[in-house]
Image (cartoon, rainbow, N blue to C red; front, side, top):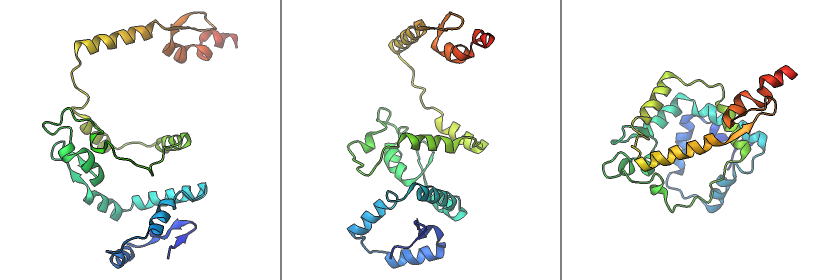
Length: 210
């Protein structure tokens, strides 16, 4: 029987002991096609209000100490880049597929998943991107988090460029610098970045007129 509370999965309100009992009772049983379809459509059939409530409940569950401990136990350390990774990403991008493994220098990042199809993957809509961005606004990262990000990026993107690449990059930058725009208030030409930052409605002449 599918139990729900206000359109939410009852699993969010179960204790770990109760979950273990359910897990033992269903071990080895195959899910029916209807059951699988119901699981796929569970989130899709929610209203916007129900999705918000469900999202908040999931965040609360994710922050529980027992859930964090279980998630960290499942993670593996890549022997080549010494990074702690969850099992899914470990199989795709680490271990034998790690970029730092000798002989994998030229491997493409997408190679492990090349040719794989994800029919159920949905593109994030514009509103979804805005919501994700707003969700991170005002959040401060701890020093430990900053150090982890810093250490994970060490040695990356430091491949020396050839002389040809340097020349091409220089030409592109010079072409960009040649493009000038006119400020309608002081009648001077500037780079686009300067127009955005210091001119237009921010121009001193504009302020004097107003």
